[in-house]
Structures are given as C-alpha cells and as structure tokens.
Amino acid sequence: MAKKAPSLMETIVSLCKRRGFIFQASEIYGGMGNTYDYGPLGVELMRRTKEAWWNSMVTERADVVGLDSAIIQHPKVWETSGHVAGFSDPMVDCKKCKGRFRADKLEDARCLERPSKQPGQCGGELTEPREFNLMFKTQVGAAEATSSTAYLRPETAQGIFLNFKNVMDSARLKPPFGIAQIGKSFRNEITPGNFVFRTREFEQAEMEFFVHPDEDVKWYEYWKAKRFAWYTEYGVNPDKLRMREHDQSELAHYAKATADVEYEYPFGWGELEGVANRTDFDLKRHSEATGENLLYFDPQTKEKYTPYVIEPAGGMNRTALTFMIDAYEEEQLEKDTRVVLHFHPEIAPITAAVFPLVKKDGMPEKAQEVAAQLRKARFTTFYDEKGAIGRRYRRQDEVGTPFCITIDGDSLSDDVVTVRHRDSMEQDKVKISELVTFLIEAKSNWKRPEKKE
Ligand code: GAP
Image 1: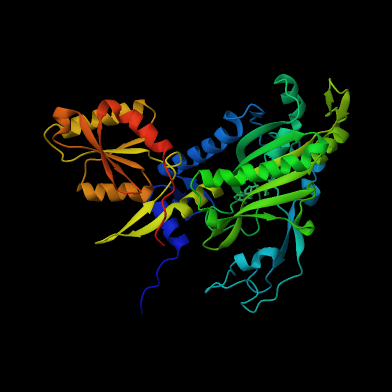
Image 2 (image 1 turned 30 degrees about the vertical axis):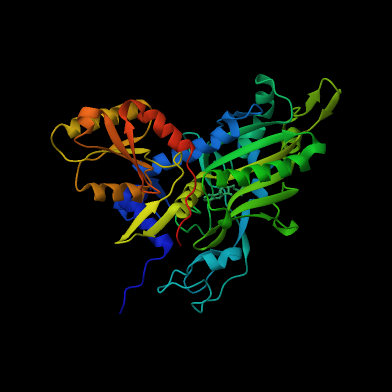
C-alpha cells in the first residue's frame, strides 16, 4: 500500500523537532500531552515575534507604556473579574471511552479509542454539556492546612487593570493611553491541540488602551485595522487572513464588541488575536470591590470618568506558529525541490549564515572573522563549514535564514564576499567593510515573495 503523504501540520511538527524549534515536553519520560519546550531556533523565533509586537505596540508609540505584573495575584481579583464564576467552557463526557471533550469544539477533538474518531462517532453516548472552569488552582503558603487557594492567571489583562492607577500616576499619562504586557497565561483547556495552537500554558501579548467613553467606537476601529495590518507587515499572506466580528451570543461577559483576526490554518480558520471593547467593566468592578478610586480626572474639562478599554490580545506561540506555517514552501526547482521558510528577516531565527567555500587555504579563518563581525553587530549568525555549499544553503533555507555569506579564495585578497538571498537565490558581491550596512538595507527592503503553489 502506498504511504500516505504527511499533512502540512505533520510536516511542520516534524521540521520543528528535527531542526530544534519545538520539542515535546518531558519527552524522555514519555512526553506530557499538549505541552512543548522551545529549542534553540524556537526560542529565537518566539523572541523575535515578541519583539516585533513590542516594537509596534510600545517602542514606536508615545501613548503606550509597558508592564510586567505577577502571574499569581490576590484570589479575589478573579472573583471580581468574573473568571471564578464564568471563565468556563461547556464539557461533555463519553460514557464509553471516558474521554472529556469541549462540547462546542467536538470537530477538533479525537476520541480516546483507536483508530481515533470524533467524539460520539465511536458509538459512545455523550453526557449533557456542563460548565468546566478553565482556571488552574494552586496553594500559596508553606503549610497546606493554613495555605490559601490562588490561581494562575488565565489572562495577563487583569494585572494591567490592577495597576491602572499606579501606571497612570507614575508615568503621568492621560487618556487615550495604553499599557502593554507580554507574559505567560494558563488555562486548563478541555481540548488542547493542533500542536502549539491551543495549549495549557502559553504566552500572551495584551494591551489595554484607556479612552474617553465617547471615543470607544473610534478606537475600536483603529485597533482592529492596526492589528490586522501588523500581520501583513510581517509577511503573512493577506489572502489567508480575515477579520471576523463576533455576534452577540459569542461575546465574553466583559465585552460590548469583539472581532478576531483569523488565519486559514491547514485545519481550518482559527483565531489569531482578538480585539475587544471591554467598556468600563473591569475598572468599575475592581473599584467597587476594593473601594479604590479608579477614575480619571481631566483637569481641563473638570470631568471625572471611568475610561473605556479597547484591548488587542494575541497569543505569541500561535503567532510564531502562524509565521511558520505561512512561510513554509516546498519550491519546485529545475532539478529538485527545496524546502524554504520565507520568514520576514526580522522574524527569522538566524539572520546570517557564514560559510567558507572550502575548509582550507585560510578560508575558515576569514569566515570566522566575518561571522564575529556580524555577531558584534547583533546579527544572530551561524557558522558552517561542513559539506557541499549547495547542501549548506538548503539547510539554511529550511530554517528560514535570509542571508548566506560565502568566503572564497578571492575573498582573502579582495575582501569581497558573496551574499546569497534565500527567497530569490540571487547573489551579490559585497565588500566586507560594507557587509553590515548591506544586510541592514536588504532586511528593510524585504518583500514577501509570491509563493508558487
Ligand atoms: N484578555 C482577553 C483574552 O485573553 P482570548 O481571546 O481568550 O482573550 C487572547 O485570548 C489570545 O491568546 C488568543 O487570540 C490566542 O491567540 C491566545 N490564546 C488563548 N488561549 C490560548 C491557548 N490555550 N493556547 C495558545 N494560545 C491561546
């Protein structure tokens, strides 16, 4: 029987492990389901994804500042925010295989029996749906008897609301202004899956933008457009992106309106990021629960008001996965096929690879010098002297390195190297003294190539 070709998701999972992007967590103990560790290339990809978000949301703006709040907050925070009572998904049990599944995502779930089917298709009866709270509980305090229950945060947003006053006063801000943070969140998902798309611990990037209540609609539209554009700026195919407005029945307990940036994954359309109009819900609730004044007083108009909040909230693991899926191509060349990741150069885990053409005649030493120069200029640089030059190019294409630099015999006398571009495979001759400037320019001139489907 002919072997079935792997799906794009299977290919990506296997590439991630083989090249050191993402590994199964606790692998040598048999693995921990739906939990992942990031290897050398994965950690660089995540770091750059977060940096690209931070640059656009904080560094390039005068009206947004950063924050890093605690993962474990006072347990009452989550009662006030509505998460203890309402942060749940509907769950069903299969009476035959004893599996537990998210009732509204049965099509994404697989039955525990083999060959695995969609829940219910194994002939087992499914129970009526019941609500399952997604928050992870933990104990704070050394002695169990006297310790108190606390929660791992299910969103980073609440830490921002708790510090609204601290930040506004200390940074001397007035609406409209935003507070951004990136950090881990935890959800005891009933049906995690699709690799790192849905996991129980993940990195969120959220920004709460505080505005005058009369300006919420304007800013909601602004952030929807801004966030959608961010993905295309980093090279994601616009034909695979869409903005989907939630209908009333889908809205979270705190939201007046929400729209998702969605991507067409190999497993169907999925949420990449949500932009929500959270109104004054959170600040008012925390103010009522604590007695703290969380109003803004406008000294010019003498008006006192609770700001409305527009929140763009994305997942960094999901974004990095999307960059990878979208960048992947098996490109048909004249004689063979090459696997290439067309990452935006700011996102690629390795920016430059340096090769001596051959491992002799002083070329390795010269190449090491060039590599050291690039590292000093803060380019993540990989040095490789093993194997045929063509194979070395292919290994870098597969991990998305935008520039390969080759030192040949002539380089020793004329100080000129060859820069080979990943997407076009075209080559340029560049003087070593001009290499850093050349690469900076090539990075900023990068355009998403038309992929041949
Ligand atoms: N503060 C609003 C909030 O948390 P959300 O839509 O639940 O909104 C925001 O989460 C983003 O976090 C999602 O768009 C997604 O990218 C990411 N995310 C949520 N749950 C996730 C999970 N279990 N695994 C990976 N990423 C997740």
